[in-house]
Amino acid sequence: MRKVVMLLLCFSFVSVWAQTQKVISSDWTSFNQTIDIQSSVKKKFKVIASVKVETNEPLAWAGVWARVDTKNEEDGFFDNMGDRPVKAKEWQSYTVEGTIDQNSKSLSFGGLCLFNGKFYFDKFVVLIENDKGVFEPLTILNSSFETPVKNGDIPKWSFGTTKDKIVKVKEYKVTSDKSSADGNYALLIEGTGIKAKQDGRIGNVEGASPKIADMISMLEDLKDRVERTVKNMSPYEIDYLHDAEANRIGALIMHLAAAEKYYQVFTFENRGFNEEEKKKWNTALNLEQGGRDEFKGHSVQYYLDIYNEVRATTIAELKKRDDNWFVEVQKSYDWTNQYCWFHVMEHQSSHLGQILFLKKRIPPEPKPLILEKEIKN
Picture 1 (tube, rainbow, N blue to C red):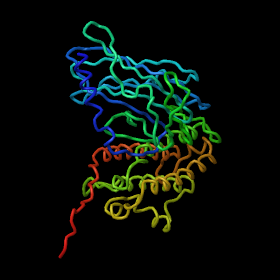
Picture 2: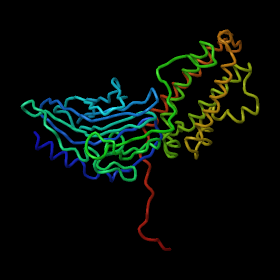
Picture 3: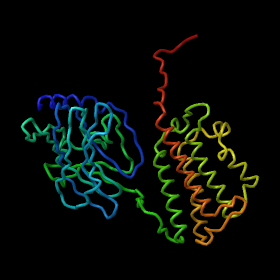
Picture 4: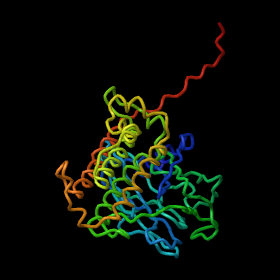
């Protein structure tokens, strides 16, 4: 078993650095090694590493992670220590334990960190159970990071969660550091400039009455999900048209902004769009062919800036109202103001699902055709 694993391990590292690297914006980052691994029976494995964290941010943490990918693409073992986050300022050893079996194809492992702070990693060890139930070590390349980081790259390791998709995150600086747990160097990943938001909370918005605070927090949660889904998409992806009746993702973001703008004037001013507002927003509100023709050729940030500007007005105006205003009825629809803003919220959720559907069906961007020789008439 060990000989087979070691041979596959050596094979798995070939051409990792030949993969295309993508730079994104995120509030977390990770690094990995991936090994091909097979077993005719179920076997246990352990991934062990030394980690320490220096941060003043309550939400910041680090972890060791491992994932087993399967031959039939079903979900395999996964653990990223999300239920036991590393926050200790002193070096400690942490272990992730899992299993592989006859359906296992590969084992990926590494470290991850979230939000702002300094996150240190050192001395990775992978152990796999042999036929006698004894854990034996696998060879890990640059396991203690003694080959220093160069130009932000970690020798023999890949950024992201798979060797095939190398993803760097611009909010994180990656260097070598001499405060090591083993040898001369440790890996240091430093996150800066990240605005951490508390997930999993409804209400408690400063300056807002209780029910309005609930609505603001739900609206913001859904907008954050939309933004996380699209913010690293390329202009090609934002403009991709799935079919002749579909909408581009950029147009859908504009549609969310337009619908929210409509409910601003409807609930805050008791009216519909005036002529000037119709010229500005109706194409995005109605979409169809007009939206397909107009909303293209922009970066994703162009659309997100408009969406965020509309949302800032929504929050400012909602904070001027109280819970009594929420139960007032808009007579033209016979809807309460609260129901109107609930509709804005569920409208976001509906189109987020549409955006996710479209995003998964975007084919790779075609590579430009390069002619080897100049063609002469």
